[in-house]
Amino acid sequence: MSNRRAKSAQAGGAGPDLERRLAACYEALPNSERQVADLLLNFPGLLATHSATEVAEQAGASKAAVSRLIQRLGYASYVAARAAVRNARQWGSPVYLDDAATGDAVRDVIDTHVAADIEILRKTLEGIDREGLATLVEAMAGARRVLVIGHRNSALLADYLRGHLGLLRDGVELAPMHGATLAEGMAGLGPEDLLIAVGFRRRVPAFATALGIARRCRTPTAVLTDPSGAALAGEARWVLTAHCRGAAIFDSYVAGVSLINHLASQLAQRLGARARTRLRAIEALHGELGDLL
Image (cartoon, rainbow, N blue to C red; front, side):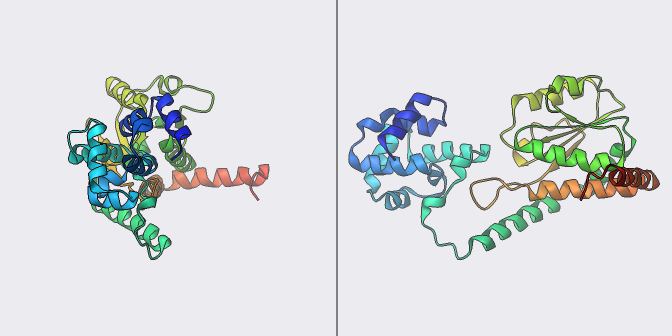
């Protein structure tokens, strides 16, 4: 890492705690500790997965240099620093999930990627409450209005869910729509409606607030989230937990997409002729408008 990057990190003052601590003392570090700091500034997640000896080997420094740096950063021990970084990994920061510099041999990155996604699907589907899914499908079929919300990466899944459900029944909305606010989308929610909240890790504060508003309005709520959101969604009527820890730097949403496809398919079966009538009408309009190739 260059001095310029260290100064930039220090000036920003808004990065994860480990990076702030490193940037604050970077200029005064002796060469041996600076080698370790360079490695950790680029790949802080190594503290969660590697021993002090292994970090030293990756940095080309001594174990003593790692220990001195950890103490200089204000951590009580290497174990304490590791716990802090593991918390950051659980939070989902891509910076802390990147282990690309470890030098570990990977026979085939595609095979590793596929194996991780398969494991995500396996763990997710093994934990699904099938009876709960059935009652959720009933609620999706009978609600006066289905409102779907999601932010950041979850917004992609929320839009995907809204699109599928909107093919099968009317009254399916997404909030916030482009150019609108979440408040405008949630206005008028009541006991006859259904809120489906998609909230994978790194959720915005408004997500928890929206769940509270739905409870106050007595609106039945389903939450599609990862394991870290289970406690937050504890008061929701349905909690669908989809694992998302991928093989590399970014989370994988294959399990979330799979659950959405399953829910939409089950809703189509539940609505039967009603869904088929709507689908035929949409297809007829596609032909009239010529909006698909």
